Length: 68
Image (cartoon, rainbow, N blue to C red):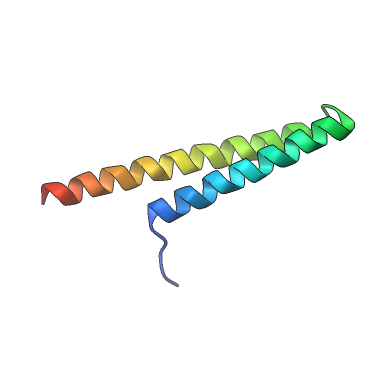
């Protein structure tokens, strides 16, 4: 299996964060703040955090490659 670049992974994670946020908004609109809405927000937060971390890793790798 081929490894994905951190940039591609960051885009995937950020898109998943957007999708889970949209699902959470829809859940809150239809049935209020329940367990499921909080769970979706938690998943979206983890995805956004992972996406930002992967983006920073990509930037760090590129800066190290430039120095060589």
